[in-house]
Length: 120
Ligand code: HEC
Image (cartoon, rainbow, N blue to C red; front, side, top):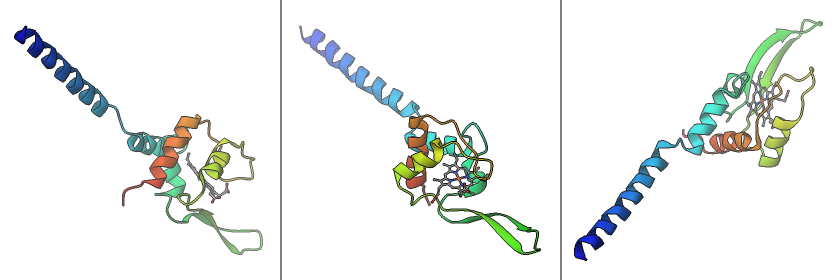
């Protein structure tokens, strides 16, 4: 009887350890978001937005009147989730610089999570 109790306890312990191991082997939402941010099936967000916390100059060019123009990507870590989703799900016209993406709701959520929690 005693041995059986120990055996059960041992089994239960093992199960909870196994669960820990499985949980730890999954990548976190932060890591998943980071991965998508740099490789969102298309040009990486980081290529234009860098770390997303400041305005980034993408290019400087001269227009027809020979005036220097700067093309900038805005900071993206302060926008609301609604806006974030909107920008990433709206089909963008050719006049826009930012490309269109085909990300799922969960992928957008993870990128947003990453941008919001970016480690310094
Ligand atoms: C080729 C450069 C480029 C890439 C790549 C890019 N963006 Fe942008 N993004 C821009 C520019 C430029 C704007 C300003 C609006 C516009 O012209 O489309 C912008 C606007 C935004 C905005 C709206 C910010 C605001 O305050 O209005 C969000 C959010 C955003 N980008 C997120 C992303 C995410 C997330 C990715 C990756 C999945 C990404 N962008 C990839 C250039 C880029």
